Length: 134
Image (cartoon, rainbow, N blue to C red; front, side):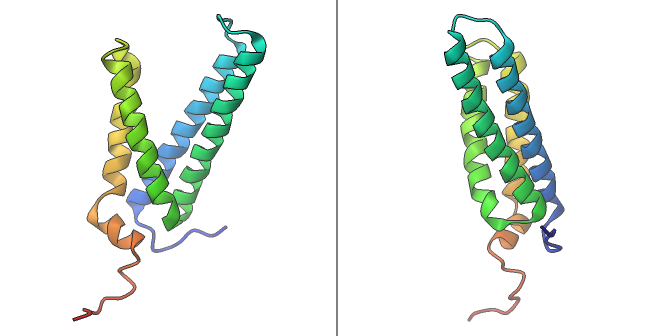
């Protein structure tokens, strides 16, 4: 796997942040697995496995962004929008702003890094053709 030299730094930074989000998901899966709760052990392990699988996908998207894969941008934007909704729910109805606000800040930062004009041009591969089609 080679790094694409044309990849903007903001894409690589977003990839690192997304990878860290995935690692946070792995930590959450481990906590779900070892923390005693109201669920039966089989249910806890199933839920932890689901979170681990989702976290692995998030890590893969982060790695793809760091490597400069253009196709990873759209799924990451969708994922950040979904996480932003989850952060809002954690902050207001669940009364857990200590969880929701940091997640929302990271989501907004990743969206800012991935939705600027330089990244849009990179994603559409516009810098390769500097000629005007008219």
